[in-house]
Amino acid sequence: TMQGLRIDEVLSIRLIDYDRNEMIVKPYRSKGKETGQGRPVVLTEELYKEIDNYIWNERAEAETNSGKISDMMFINIRDGDSQGEPLKYQTYIQVLKRCAKRAGLDPEKIRTHSGRSTKTMELLQHQAKYPEDNITDEMIRQIMGWTSSSSINPYKNHHDIRLAKIASEKINRRKTNKEERNKQ
Image 1 (cartoon, rainbow, N blue to C red):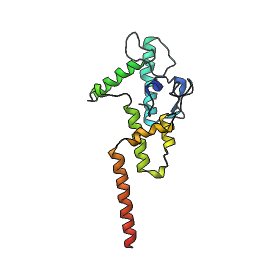
Image 2 (cartoon, rainbow, N blue to C red):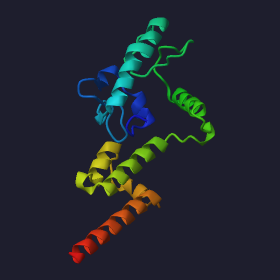
Image 3 (cartoon, rainbow, N blue to C red):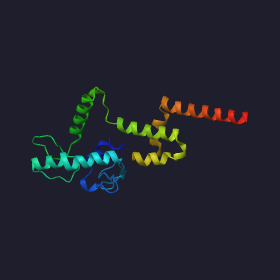
Image 4 (cartoon, rainbow, N blue to C red):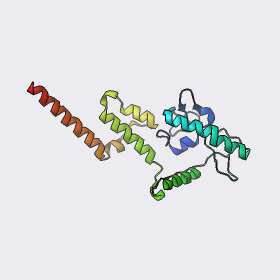
């Protein structure tokens, strides 16, 4: 997903919600917010380039071929009656599953929430591994677009071996550093 956005948020992005200079998008719809008050999402440079490529090539060609103009960022680019129309949720799921299959994954095991879960775990792992970066739970809440700070709890309570390893490495590093100081 686009930086932890929900599918509905991605599909609600209009062209005017995309700020190329600031490299952000602001979905028109966002869970827990009024329509038209989406949360700003910062894009990576790689994603920004992919979106630009899509807009100026695939999207432009689909609009030209279909003769349909849409203010929505994501439109159906495949040939046919729906080409040029705003991308629908079900079409998105079909595309996602086809991409998974091409990547060698079982499309039946694809969950639409997996991208958000993965993003949350990446943030928690970074938080644990690099405390000096001061990534707080509140920052994670804002990035993920949660209205409640308790939304992070299922991810923190999940028995993730990666977080346990990070904690163990830190404890062992502290012990080693303390032992080295005591030898001096």
